[in-house]
Length: 85
Length: 195
Image 1 (cartoon, rainbow over the protein chains, first blue to last red):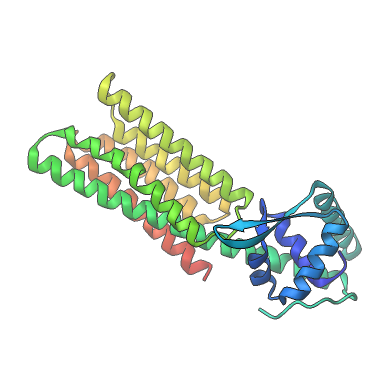
Image 2: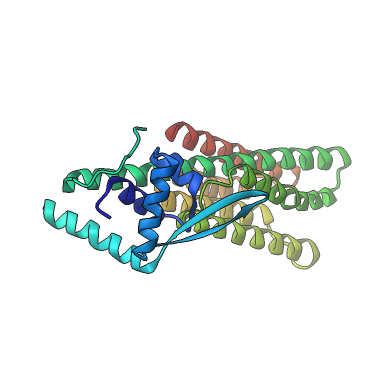
């Protein structure tokens, strides 16, 4: 999680049911390629689940934080707080 | 917003800044979307209440209150269109809860109206206006937005007082017109706050 983009993606996903790729790209301002790579890494770590489907006729990638991802994110934020306090 | 590229060295403070920036940005987008819902339902309430008021005044018959049922019939398809336009905006847990609150309000409103029209006579305006205010105030608490909460209290308490003071008749409908105006203003406030 210790990369700006991965952390940004996790921060967004922690507050929503799920989010599609275009929303994450817009919110983070990242390039498609970079975002794809980081999403794959988060998915491989089991922090997010990725579902590929269609919205009408347009391909759509939807990401959702897993319970393991939420726990990891909470632990990460708590560690940061402890470190700063 | 500046592009976020992959960096492996971040201080704890930088990490927290990213988290809060992303959460705030996401909250802003979601609130902007909820503003449109307030404006849509508010506008619909203004139009429908004024149409019924005019029909009631013109014909002298309260039977025109059945036109209220047009509101959900028109409103929900319009919400679907709005959501389709903003299909990339995710559903937050807060938005889902607010949706459930207003859905509950709609169920209450329809059931109470049907009971009042067919079975037991009661002051529907008073009940419905309190419920609108209640739903809006809770929405405000969930969205952590004082403008919405305060206007909810004004609608609920002010509306209840007005419904009790005004004589039973077409004039009661104007309370709903004011409610609609308050909902539109709420939407406009959220929109301007989270531009």
